[in-house]
Image (cartoon, rainbow, N blue to C red; front, top):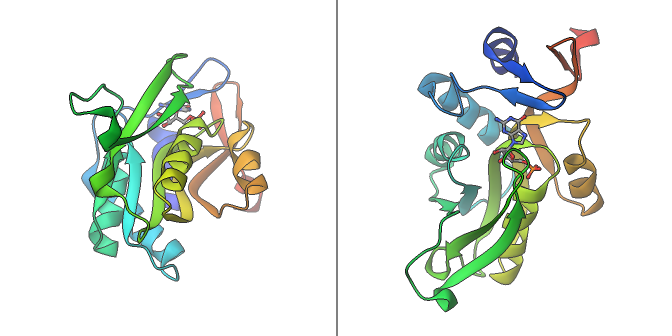
Length: 194
Ligand code: 5GP
């Protein structure tokens, strides 16, 4: 998605070997118009699927997921990372190792918001090693719901996530695909053909 790639080029900051900071349009300050355009793009990419629900993880997946939900006209559920006060048996849970924070979190979704009738589109801000998406897939399995696909805002193709999902036969569509960070600059997968 050209608009997103340009925004990443202009405003993204490469941190160390493998982290991109995009806190002025996605991870802290949020650009609603760009989010809306992403929602439209996710809808275009998955319009042939019968989607009944969108799942994401708090907090940075929520903005793009809500915009996609607006256009698909389906509810959006975000998995919570914090312990809930409600009884454990009301929740689906999964362990997720956080790529950026280097700690394991338990994510959870209330059983009342996901059922075996649901056809789910997962949306998340980044795909790195695939742990967040895998945690959501475990929850979808536990609910006996159907996974229709995974929509990612920014994929880093040099990390393991894409391969893991491909091996599981999951359809993944990413709006921007980064193949490398070179001298602090972002290089996109299709850049040579632009
Ligand atoms: P994964 O679970 O695929 O290893 O990592 C995905 C999660 O880690 C995303 O939900 C995102 O919050 C975070 N993440 C992974 N890579 C990056 C990155 O380069 N920049 C930022 N800001 N977050 C990232």
